[in-house]
Each structure stands twice: as C-alpha cells, then as structure tokens.
Image (tube, rainbow, N blue to C red):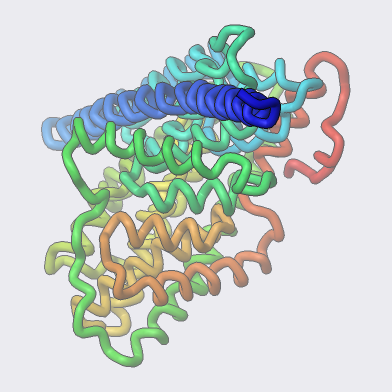
Length: 461
C-alpha cells in the first residue's frame, strides 16, 4: 500500500470512528427523553382516570344527597390545602408557574432549588391534593398539574443519569417535559409544541427541537394506546357558518379576554391579601369559607358551578340545550377564584375554557344565533378566556382546534385569541402565570440567602 493509500485508509477509519461516536452520543442523549415521555404518558392516563372518578364521586353525592356537600366540600378543601401545606408547599395551584420558575432557575448556581418545584414528592402531593379537591367539587382542572408532574418526571430521570452519560441541558429537559405533559393531558401534540415555544422557551428551538417533537409524540401515543384515540371535546358541528359570524367572534373575544384577565387580577389580589395571614386559623377559616361559598352557589343557584366544567362544554356543543342563563358565566368565573386561592393543588386551564364556553353560549342566546354559529362562538369564547389568563393566543387557538378537530375555523379561533390578548393588556401587561412565576422565584431565592435571580425583578403581585 502506498503512503497516500495508507493515509486515506487511516483518514477513513478516523472519520468512521468519529461518526460512530456521534451516533452513539446522540442515541444516549435521546434515550432519557424517550423513557421520560413514556412514563409521562402513563402518569397522564392514570391521573386522568382518577380525576374522572373523583368528579363522578361529586356527581354521585349530588344525586344522592346534595346537602352532604356542605360537609364534604369543606372537609375536602381543608384536607387538600393541608396536604400541600404540610408536605410540599410548591405543589399548590396549577403547576405551570412552577415549571416556568424551574426553567428560570435551571442554572448551575440555582439548580438545587428546582427540587422545590419538581420532584417525586411534588408528583405525589400534586395528585393527592387535586383529586381530593375534585371530589369535593372544586372548580379545578388536571392539565396544569399534569405539566408539573411531567416536568418532575423529566427532571428526575435527568438527575438519575450516571456521570459518564452525555450531558443533557436541564432547562431543555424541563421544557420538553412540560410540552409532553400538555400533549398527553389534552391529546394535543401541536398544542404541546406551541405551548413550549410561546410560553416556556427563551432558547432557540433548534437546540432541542428533535427531543421536543419526539417527547410529544411518545407521550401522546402512550396516552392514546391506553385511552384510545380520542378528542378532549369531540366533533362539534361548525358547518354552514354565516358570513357575518366574524362579528360574533369579535363580540365574544373582547369580554372573554377581559374576563380572563380580570379573574387573574382578582386572584393575585387575594394572594397578596392572604400573604398577610400569620395564624393557621386564618387560613383554615378562609379555605372553609371558600368551600361553603361554592357549595351555596351550587345548591341555591346552579350546580353547574362545580367541577372542571367539561360537561358544561360538551352539553353546549353537542346538545340542543346550548344557551345559558346570564349568571352562569359569573359563577364559572367565581368558582376558580374560590378554588384556586385556597392554596390546594389544581389547574386553571379547564375552568378557563368552561368559563369562556359559558360566555359564548350566553352571548349566542342573546343574539339568537343558529346552532352551528353558536358552536363557533362557544369555541371562540374558550380561546378568548384562556388567552386572557395565559396571554398565549396561538397556544389557546391550537388547543381548542385539536380538542375538536375543526380545522375549517382555525382563522376564527386565531382571531379570537389575538383580540383577547390585546384587550387583556388593558387589565395587566403580564399573564397570570408570569406573576406567579416571579413570586415563586422570589420566595425560593429569599428562603435562605436573600439572593435574587438576575433579571427577575418583575413584581409578583
């Protein structure tokens, strides 16, 4: 063999070795995402089934003896609050702000503090507290908690990797977990991806797009394998829409966006007021009072104030009983306020969607719209109200689109989201989740050292 031939042979062997090492490294980096996505899908399915059983338990109590809720609901609210307060204070509420705070803190200096937001203990307490709340008739959802559960799963698997394993970005792992959690909870893969891009990430998506897409697919397929292919809401009829229906979309998007922002503002004010509580009995009295208010509203006015609101949405979309009384949207706005501010675990996604749906149904009744036009206004109200809370118009539109598989109204839903986002800015420039994120970051960093995260100077309340 000539010298040139020998050099070519050695160069080819070196190139093959480098290529094989790169393939091996990429494979090793992908395996934790695959495992975490599979586990997330299993958790999402188990949690969804338990949550549905809890809500059926509430319905059974209502059917047997409605008055029992005056006893059961305060006991459930107090138990759910105590479990969080005693075992994992940062398992309270939705879970999305905790994931956002974890992404902010996922740096070498502050990474150890992320365990307060994402851990195995958080998973257990989150599930237990929210299920107790749901059984007691709490107006909460399971989607936000599923996102925090997924973030915890991805973080723990990242932590358990041996020292010789190729390094994986903690921040990207958490963001991917959140997207996978939302995709598995709602069966909305595109919604999970858009949520990660619009709400969570400040990193260019090219750095983790493969992991993100793969995680969303695996988590979603796992959920579908166990639950079957399903839509969160079904297939509402939105055919034969009138040419003027864009006016109806605008008319519902404006009050829905304002109402979502106002509900968030009121909850933040209550949190600020509760922060002055110094005695345990003050919290006990507040939680008990919230429970009794909710039961009273359900008993004396309308029982549809209870629960996540999914049945309310499906009734309005798929039955002739489409139109609401004027007061139902007010009840569906008050319900999450009295549930979420207790300090127990529970999400605000589903309650926000149901509040928007009730606004759309009420407005449609006033306008005497046809059933198909009413369905579109209901969907637009859902997008508008959720946008008012989250300030993520595209995520809200894509979520509702994927929940219903109604691609012919995508522009109507995006219009509703954009209008709601603009009017919500009149109430507050920041989303509900942004406020809570900075509050959590501030709390965690001041617990021991009094340090503050650079850039996290935005007021929490």
